[in-house]
Amino acid sequence: MKKQVMIIGLGQFGMSLTRSLSERGVEILAIDRKNELVRIASEFVTEALCFNATDEAALAQIAPERRDICIVAIGDDSREASIICTALLRQMGAKRIIGRANDALHERILYLVGAHEVVNPERDFGERFANRVVYEGLMGELRLGKDLVLTEMQVPSSFVGKTLLELKLPKRFGITVVAVRTEGESGIQTPQPNEVLKEKDIVVVVSKMDSVKKLLERIAV
Image (cartoon, rainbow, N blue to C red; front, side, top):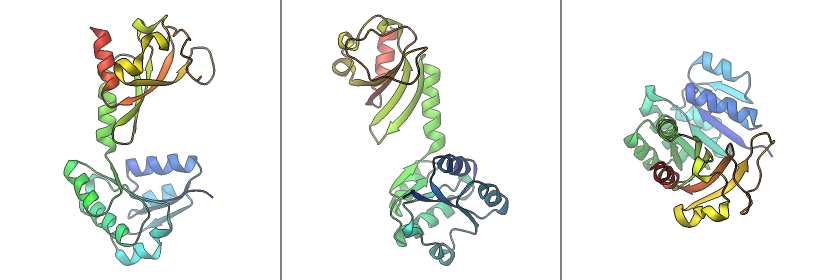
Protein backbone atom coordinates (compact mmCIF):
# COMPACT_ATOMS: atom_id res chain seq x y z
CA MET A 1 0.00 0.00 0.00
CA LYS A 2 1.37 3.40 -1.02
CA LYS A 3 2.10 5.96 1.67
CA GLN A 4 -0.50 8.72 1.80
CA VAL A 5 0.73 12.24 2.53
CA MET A 6 -1.08 15.55 2.89
CA ILE A 7 0.97 18.66 2.10
CA ILE A 8 -0.42 22.06 3.06
CA GLY A 9 1.31 25.04 1.45
CA LEU A 10 2.66 24.98 -2.10
CA GLY A 11 5.35 27.64 -1.98
CA GLN A 12 8.86 26.91 -3.20
CA PHE A 13 9.57 24.35 -0.46
CA GLY A 14 6.13 22.74 -0.49
CA MET A 15 5.99 22.45 -4.29
CA SER A 16 9.48 20.99 -4.48
CA LEU A 17 8.67 18.46 -1.75
CA THR A 18 5.36 17.59 -3.43
CA ARG A 19 7.04 16.95 -6.77
CA SER A 20 9.84 14.86 -5.25
CA LEU A 21 7.47 12.68 -3.24
CA SER A 22 5.21 12.19 -6.27
CA GLU A 23 8.18 10.97 -8.29
CA ARG A 24 8.75 8.38 -5.56
CA GLY A 25 5.24 7.00 -5.88
CA VAL A 26 3.70 8.65 -2.81
CA GLU A 27 -0.02 9.41 -2.94
CA ILE A 28 -0.32 13.13 -2.22
CA LEU A 29 -3.18 15.43 -1.36
CA ALA A 30 -1.82 18.94 -1.99
CA ILE A 31 -3.55 22.00 -0.53
CA ASP A 32 -3.05 25.73 -1.01
CA ARG A 33 -5.27 28.82 -0.98
CA LYS A 34 -3.88 30.04 -4.34
CA ASN A 35 -5.59 28.62 -7.42
CA GLU A 36 -2.52 28.87 -9.66
CA LEU A 37 -0.33 26.83 -7.31
CA VAL A 38 -3.05 24.19 -6.95
CA ARG A 39 -3.36 24.01 -10.74
CA ILE A 40 0.37 23.40 -11.13
CA ALA A 41 0.42 20.71 -8.44
CA SER A 42 -2.64 18.98 -9.91
CA GLU A 43 -0.53 17.97 -12.91
CA PHE A 44 1.52 15.48 -10.89
CA VAL A 45 -0.21 14.75 -7.54
CA THR A 46 -3.05 12.37 -6.72
CA GLU A 47 -5.38 15.22 -5.71
CA ALA A 48 -5.02 19.00 -5.29
CA LEU A 49 -7.51 21.25 -3.49
CA CYS A 50 -7.79 25.01 -3.15
CA PHE A 51 -8.96 26.28 0.23
CA ASN A 52 -7.67 27.95 3.39
CA ALA A 53 -6.37 25.16 5.67
CA THR A 54 -7.02 27.27 8.78
CA ASP A 55 -10.75 26.76 8.10
CA GLU A 56 -11.53 24.04 10.65
CA ALA A 57 -14.66 22.78 8.91
CA ALA A 58 -12.98 22.56 5.50
CA LEU A 59 -9.92 20.81 6.93
CA ALA A 60 -12.04 18.28 8.81
CA GLN A 61 -13.87 17.30 5.60
CA ILE A 62 -10.69 15.83 4.06
CA ALA A 63 -10.06 13.59 7.11
CA PRO A 64 -6.38 14.31 7.90
CA GLU A 65 -6.41 11.49 10.48
CA ARG A 66 -6.52 9.00 7.61
CA ARG A 67 -3.23 10.20 6.14
CA ASP A 68 0.08 8.62 7.10
CA ILE A 69 1.78 12.02 7.30
CA CYS A 70 0.52 15.62 7.29
CA ILE A 71 3.12 18.23 6.33
CA VAL A 72 2.48 21.90 7.04
CA ALA A 73 4.79 23.57 4.52
CA ILE A 74 3.33 27.07 4.80
CA GLY A 75 6.10 29.60 4.22
CA ASP A 76 7.34 32.87 5.64
CA ASP A 77 4.26 34.83 4.55
CA SER A 78 1.97 33.29 7.19
CA ARG A 79 3.50 32.04 10.41
CA GLU A 80 0.14 32.37 12.17
CA ALA A 81 -1.53 30.12 9.59
CA SER A 82 1.10 27.41 10.01
CA ILE A 83 0.60 27.42 13.80
CA ILE A 84 -3.21 27.30 13.55
CA CYS A 85 -3.12 24.57 10.93
CA THR A 86 -0.71 22.45 12.99
CA ALA A 87 -2.91 22.78 16.07
CA LEU A 88 -6.03 21.81 14.11
CA LEU A 89 -4.36 18.74 12.64
CA ARG A 90 -3.33 17.57 16.11
CA GLN A 91 -6.87 18.09 17.43
CA MET A 92 -8.22 16.06 14.51
CA GLY A 93 -5.99 13.12 15.34
CA ALA A 94 -3.42 13.33 12.55
CA LYS A 95 -0.98 10.43 12.97
CA ARG A 96 2.23 12.33 12.21
CA ILE A 97 2.54 16.06 11.73
CA ILE A 98 5.67 17.65 10.26
CA GLY A 99 5.85 21.44 10.42
CA ARG A 100 8.07 23.92 8.64
CA ALA A 101 9.62 26.59 10.87
CA ASN A 102 11.16 29.89 9.92
CA ASP A 103 13.16 30.41 13.12
CA ALA A 104 13.77 28.96 16.60
CA LEU A 105 10.72 30.62 18.18
CA HIS A 106 8.43 29.39 15.43
CA GLU A 107 9.89 25.88 15.87
CA ARG A 108 9.18 25.88 19.62
CA ILE A 109 5.60 27.03 19.09
CA LEU A 110 4.93 24.36 16.46
CA TYR A 111 6.08 21.68 18.89
CA LEU A 112 3.90 23.19 21.63
CA VAL A 113 0.75 23.11 19.48
CA GLY A 114 1.24 19.52 18.38
CA ALA A 115 3.88 18.99 15.68
CA HIS A 116 5.67 15.65 15.96
CA GLU A 117 8.63 16.95 13.96
CA VAL A 118 9.76 20.37 12.75
CA VAL A 119 12.12 21.19 9.89
CA ASN A 120 13.78 24.45 8.88
CA PRO A 121 14.90 23.89 5.25
CA GLU A 122 16.62 27.26 4.85
CA ARG A 123 18.68 26.84 8.03
CA ASP A 124 19.53 23.22 7.28
CA PHE A 125 20.63 24.01 3.73
CA GLY A 126 22.67 26.98 4.92
CA GLU A 127 24.52 24.83 7.46
CA ARG A 128 25.24 22.08 4.93
CA PHE A 129 26.37 24.52 2.26
CA ALA A 130 28.61 26.41 4.70
CA ASN A 131 30.39 23.14 5.54
CA ARG A 132 30.93 22.45 1.83
CA VAL A 133 32.47 25.92 1.40
CA VAL A 134 34.76 25.63 4.43
CA TYR A 135 35.83 21.98 4.15
CA GLU A 136 37.33 20.92 0.83
CA GLY A 137 36.21 17.49 -0.30
CA LEU A 138 32.94 17.46 1.63
CA MET A 139 30.23 16.75 -0.95
CA GLY A 140 26.99 16.47 0.99
CA GLU A 141 25.33 15.81 4.34
CA LEU A 142 22.07 14.31 5.54
CA ARG A 143 20.91 14.46 9.14
CA LEU A 144 19.84 11.18 10.73
CA GLY A 145 17.73 12.19 13.71
CA LYS A 146 18.98 14.76 16.20
CA ASP A 147 22.58 13.67 16.79
CA LEU A 148 23.82 11.73 13.74
CA VAL A 149 24.73 12.79 10.21
CA LEU A 150 25.42 10.90 6.98
CA THR A 151 28.28 12.54 5.08
CA GLU A 152 29.59 12.01 1.56
CA MET A 153 33.18 13.11 1.07
CA GLN A 154 36.23 12.64 -1.11
CA VAL A 155 38.97 10.57 0.45
CA PRO A 156 41.47 13.00 2.05
CA SER A 157 44.94 12.88 0.50
CA SER A 158 46.44 11.67 3.78
CA PHE A 159 44.15 8.60 3.63
CA VAL A 160 45.20 7.53 0.13
CA GLY A 161 47.11 4.24 0.13
CA LYS A 162 45.86 3.27 3.58
CA THR A 163 43.16 0.82 4.66
CA LEU A 164 40.23 1.46 6.95
CA LEU A 165 41.82 -0.94 9.41
CA GLU A 166 44.95 1.22 9.52
CA LEU A 167 43.02 4.49 9.82
CA LYS A 168 40.96 3.33 12.86
CA LEU A 169 38.34 6.03 12.21
CA PRO A 170 35.71 4.71 14.67
CA LYS A 171 38.21 4.69 17.54
CA ARG A 172 40.01 7.94 16.70
CA PHE A 173 37.12 10.11 15.50
CA GLY A 174 33.86 8.24 16.10
CA ILE A 175 33.34 7.90 12.34
CA THR A 176 32.07 4.75 10.61
CA VAL A 177 32.52 4.27 6.85
CA VAL A 178 29.37 2.62 5.47
CA ALA A 179 30.07 2.76 1.71
CA VAL A 180 32.83 3.44 -0.80
CA ARG A 181 32.50 4.55 -4.43
CA THR A 182 35.51 4.14 -6.70
CA GLU A 183 35.99 6.19 -9.87
CA GLY A 184 35.09 4.26 -13.00
CA GLU A 185 32.98 1.71 -11.16
CA SER A 186 29.19 1.76 -11.12
CA GLY A 187 27.36 1.93 -7.82
CA ILE A 188 28.80 1.83 -4.34
CA GLN A 189 30.52 -1.00 -2.51
CA THR A 190 30.43 -2.25 1.04
CA PRO A 191 33.71 -1.10 2.65
CA GLN A 192 36.33 -3.79 3.20
CA PRO A 193 38.65 -3.23 6.20
CA ASN A 194 41.78 -4.31 4.29
CA GLU A 195 41.01 -2.57 0.99
CA VAL A 196 43.38 0.28 0.13
CA LEU A 197 41.71 3.67 -0.42
CA LYS A 198 42.44 5.33 -3.77
CA GLU A 199 42.94 8.98 -4.67
CA LYS A 200 39.51 9.65 -6.18
CA ASP A 201 37.44 7.37 -3.97
CA ILE A 202 34.26 8.74 -2.41
CA VAL A 203 33.33 7.52 1.07
CA VAL A 204 29.99 7.72 2.85
CA VAL A 205 30.28 7.90 6.63
CA VAL A 206 27.98 8.02 9.66
CA SER A 207 29.03 10.03 12.69
CA LYS A 208 27.93 12.48 15.36
CA MET A 209 27.31 16.02 14.19
CA ASP A 210 30.80 17.50 14.58
CA SER A 211 32.98 14.41 14.09
CA VAL A 212 33.71 14.89 10.37
CA LYS A 213 34.42 18.58 10.96
CA LYS A 214 36.97 17.70 13.65
CA LEU A 215 38.56 15.10 11.38
CA LEU A 216 38.95 17.52 8.48
CA GLU A 217 40.31 20.27 10.73
CA ARG A 218 42.87 17.90 12.23
CA ILE A 219 44.21 16.54 8.94
CA ALA A 220 44.39 20.05 7.50
CA VAL A 221 46.92 21.09 10.15
